[in-house]
Length: 267
Length: 156
Image (cartoon, rainbow over all chains, first blue to last red; front, side):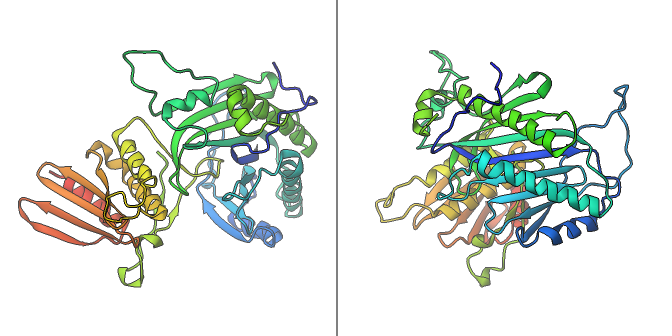
């Protein structure tokens, strides 16, 4: 049932994944100010020449040991996106978040693999970020949560023709034999799975239009969220390995063998 | 429904208008991928009809018209996404392809009608008609102009 770290995980030659992200949430850095975004950018600008401001991500609500909500009077957060030249990778930074995203660019990009690019890139960039915090005496991040997310898109004309065909793509829905109900329509389906002490796996299936090209899709997002044992890079990376295992093994369980064939499953 | 900001469109004289439409989504999720989520609402049905125009075959009208350009389909979907908050006030627009490869949207509010045409070159025009006055037409240059027209038709 559980996703062991050491057994081989499924692999596909042509998976429907369009985005992956590894992210860390930590206690807000008290001395972090807006100029620090620029100082950090000066260190990574050669690799990430584009920058965008974004509204902040909401963090978990802070509570004390008794579980009571703590009201913090802190300045409003800012989030910066640092994008690499091809805009296939992105670093998101705010005073309590650090996230690395990879996304598929049109047609040519193959999924670069967790072991080959996603994991080592996060580890390198996180270390670089922590080194920056150390040099600027901004403190050491106390990690409160980690996230591994894979976004998969099923396109009309490739995985399905009619919306009701989604039951042939995912394994957790089935065609309804009804003389009353019409065909399966629009909407969002959410599931969650307990990962025990590691956290939880969240699954969302939504019908959508992809903004880049107006393609009709179903988007299946799997997010493992939890807390590493300690705040060290090693512990964070170990948690990512577990979270990623839940995501990829969960993906196989949540999709059908016919689709695995379409996506050229090799393991 | 994912919301996005649209910057003012460029002046009509400087070239195709809607091709200069820039959408900068203020993302409040960790994900980067940008989608318009479809809910069980009529407005989503209109968005799907626009998306389906991309699948029209050439000569769909027997007069040699091409299907709408994919860039115009993307932009028209964006217009509907940005005006989705009117769904409580207005029925969704009728969606139709127009000869030459454009896209038409038509709203009806009581005795008023508003038509928006996304032209094959990416510019846009509007025509509004009410029993109180003659028809009024002109270029549609900004998203806020479209929203003003929708407020006009909703205030029946």
